[in-house]
Length: 261
Ligand SMILES: C[S@@+](CC[C@H](N)C(=O)[O-])C[C@H]1O[C@@H](n2cnc3c(N)ncnc32)[C@H](O)[C@@H]1O
Image (cartoon, rainbow, N blue to C red; front, side, top):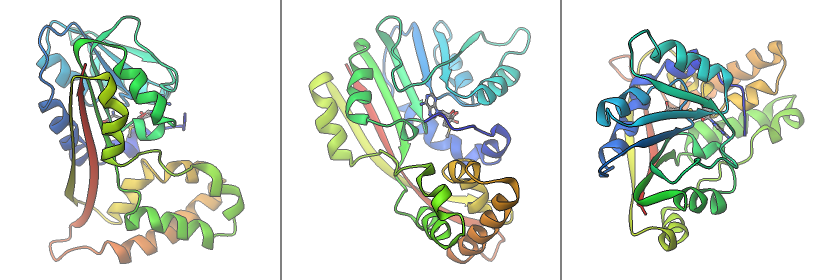
């Protein structure tokens, strides 16, 4: 899926979005790293961490979104800064030019369909001992997502937006084990549920506005979009009320996969 991304909206919550990315990075144990691909790199939030971790490696950020890549270039290519390559590509059929040392993907592959081919295809493009590291939200049964569907069904534009995004293709942890095990020597899969503490008004709706809700908003005209978002926000405020300290809690489940070839 190559939705149009809004880096500014996405970066509103760059703090809580970073924590799982770093948890994933911490579990990659691989020596002599020469090439690291950041698949679905977005605005490049992680790419400079890779440069710190593997200073000698070539770091290549891949993303389908021109807006995200522009933002990444602006933020991370200051004169004298680390040299990172940014490439536009759709991950659906993407493969590295040569077997890679690290294929890393944080919060991106849930946007790409057909995991039954995608993930083994990536694993087969690692060098021996190379690592495929993937983190994806597995939160599509949470109220934040259920209320998207309720809002769509209650809106006068249901027919127009219902099909804007299918269910995320993210599978059960056991299914990823069965899928990847024939292609790798070690497999480490786990889930975490983060109790995210968000600042600001209407915080959870603002969060999904920069990610899962976006395809639906994009399918609407400008004036319809605001009406739709307001209705969704009312439902979300009830489901995720502010706490006594003014913060909003957003429990968020994520799956992590670290596969070593
Ligand atoms: C939620 S952002 C994650 C960005 C970054 N990895 C991070 O952790 O901050 C998802 C990114 O995946 C990219 N993406 C989605 N589908 C894609 C596809 N089929 N090919 C390439 N990139 C894709 C989007 O453009 C977006 O930048």
